[in-house]
Image (cartoon, rainbow, N blue to C red):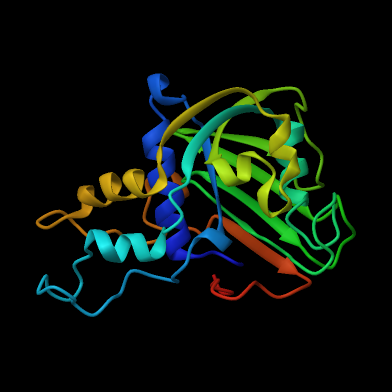
Length: 227
């Protein structure tokens, strides 16, 4: 389905850094997989830290660009549009590049690459606590197009990088921490003796992957096809 465990971890960290109201009040975060420079954090020990432990340098290998976080307000229609913009040739995206974004906990969607542009994304939902909201239904209809959400991306994406020009529609922009700092802060939550981070175990995800592929093209390199 084009999920990416390392990308999930990074999206989780950026969401955690910007969810508090004073830091953006984010409801959703998106990570571009092109900025995830290593598919995982399973490095052989480098400075005697022991296998399975992650150093700052190893985290930097995965997130090396020093991008800053930007939280903005987007409409539900913007969310649908930018999800459709992931696919090659759609909404101004490069004709040769499909760029599946990685969402934060509780945000899920289905895509079908066999359909035409603007008809590929459906069943977009957002779970927060005990409440699950349908943003786009199973037929691909945006239920409340003008409803707004606070969304976090990195500054590269916020300025239309990787073809995600819909983010240029964002309003009430608030700059935040550097991505590597958000990642390191989040990873300390999983330092021993705490449980290690595990994909698909966030309560908001309900134990299922965030992205569901039902047909069409294959996933980009580095993504898990099933799930």
